[in-house]
Amino acid sequence: GVKLLNGEQKMEMKATKEVKVGERVSFCRCWKSAKHPYCDGSHNKYNKETGDHVGPIVVAAVQA
Ligand code: FES
Image 1 (cartoon, helix red, strand yellow):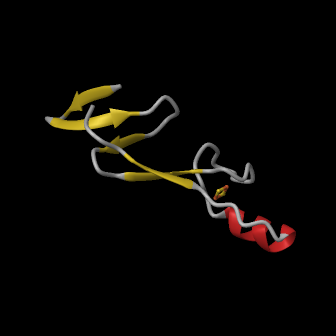
Image 2 (cartoon, rainbow, N blue to C red):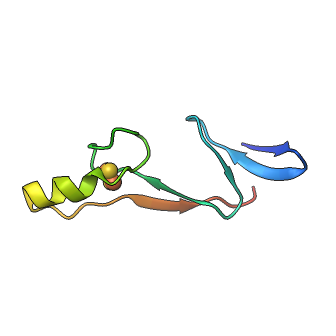
């Protein structure tokens, strides 16, 4: 949902993160991140080890 904080509109995500409108968040799709559900770059090591080519989905927050 969207919540007004300090006069600024922000999107509150169900996990633990608040983001500003327009901010981008990378969500892990390789299941190797230590910061799941967010990407921490672990997909690079995973791709090298396995020959896979997976990466995060990048989502931009918009005003609801
Ligand atoms: Fe999983 Fe980046 S760590 S996609």
